[in-house]
Length: 118
Image (cartoon, rainbow, N blue to C red; front, side, top):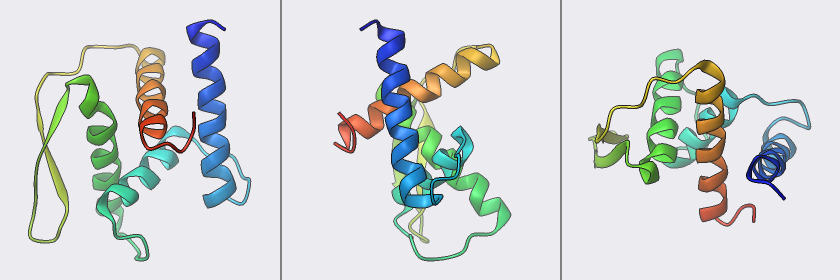
């Protein structure tokens, strides 16, 4: 199986995992998956979030899944227990499609390290 086919298969399994648990089978996009990862990383699973907090949760998820790639490093938790990251390396300039592939690869890697998918 080629690298692209393997990523596509693993991404489909990742999406299926999230859809079955968080969307009653409805389709979920990249942003929705990042939001859920952010909530998981924050650890405050059973609360409602304000609009700006939802954006912060997506930022947490992006930092977390890109951390193994060397772009971000965990810094600390603030007084409200929100994680903070520092930029280690500036993200490369990528076209929209390339950004999507990078994020999908990073999320799939996160799911594999977390042993949610293989």
